[in-house]
Length: 78
Image (cartoon, rainbow, N blue to C red; front, top):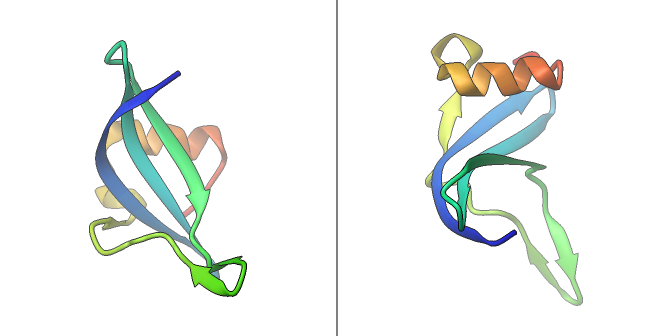
């Protein structure tokens, strides 16, 4: 599967952890979501962390229906 487009990015706070949800499309145009924890990673001597500047901070109340469905599927409460 090849990701051809990255759409909206959402930042979700779960206690002390932050999750990033990215809306992506594959080469067939099917919409998918990637979910990963936002933290600092070491790469050799350098540190790297995902860019969260473009992400929308999300609360369950304001979340789009498709995001609410994902959060319910994984039983994530924000």
